[in-house]
Length: 443
Ligand code: SF4
Ligand code: SF4
Image 1 (tube, rainbow, N blue to C red):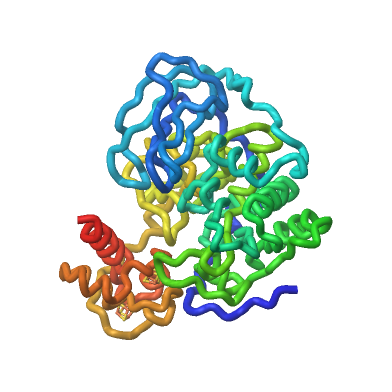
Image 2: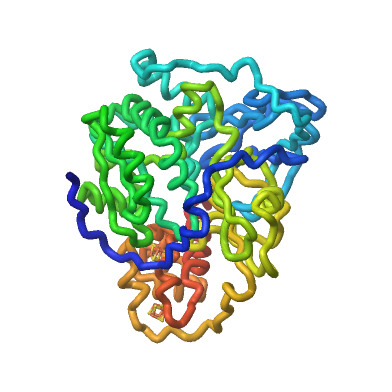
């Protein structure tokens, strides 16, 4: 039995998971066009190995990783390469190179898509890391960090514990919850592969207490494995942040950036990533699809879809019954950390966990008022920094002061802005400071 430790900061946000938590995962189907960005992961963009007019099959590699920290890209379905050209990247908010695939509707798999092993005994740690690299696996919890790199910690930083992150603390999102409920055994297979590849002798599955169905399913799935335990956490945002999870479950504090979980002997991976690892080993299927929650009061039929990477948001919203009322705001990701979009004609990427649609009634435009120094933003900040001062420095262009106030420690969770009674756009100012500080460091 794991005792959960007290974690600094955080906010109680309405979960809103009831809209989609009972919607089983359905295959969304094949859209008319698939857009695959060469950069949809942390690190160097992948390098195309196809050209326009090439025919490709489902699961075929179409771009290879460039360098160690990069990820391969595969065709999510069969069809013809239409173009390699810049398209608007919904996460990076800029034009970026993408491979455009016109599906043929046949969904024919490449011959490489076949089981690689049925038992982890048949795979060495090195073989698991190689599969993760060849299959283009990246973290599906948001950051999209290449999994093969995560599974190869430096020799002087041994890993004793691996945390499987099923907290899904962002409101509205239920993709991980459905995956754990419906595919618990596969998720645990992938998790055991991660443990073997990293050398971790102890595994802990971490779930918030608002997901009783997932808790039961995962409890059953881990029963045969004495090296894996379950930690049930109370729901509080951002409990699922990597550092907060490590602190809550293990009582270890990850040092400030550039400190990483491996500095305290831990790796954390999302349940979706573990499922993708299992699919790679058991089916030979690269990361060409993922679970996406399409929800919000502005969607007619909230749903959890298995969607091809590169599927347009508009296609998924249509599959969810279309808009329910007059849409005012569309967000890719969760409401706390996601990005608001102007256009739904953009594709999902490997890191897309949800699409939220809100109508006019749910989007309250409140005036931004002067800071009243109430300190609420400081109280809720899980990184123990002072958002009000960092934002104020950033607003005035004082980036050195913002850096000295530890702007780079901000994990962009949005808890400060949520708590601020003056409705100050704290996260936007802090993000700007982080971008400027990064540019200053490069210069
Ligand atoms: S300053 Fe950053 S880490 Fe702290 S609450 Fe705000 S967004 Fe979260
Ligand atoms: S919560 Fe808002 S009003 Fe209160 S101190 Fe922070 S920035 Fe100022």
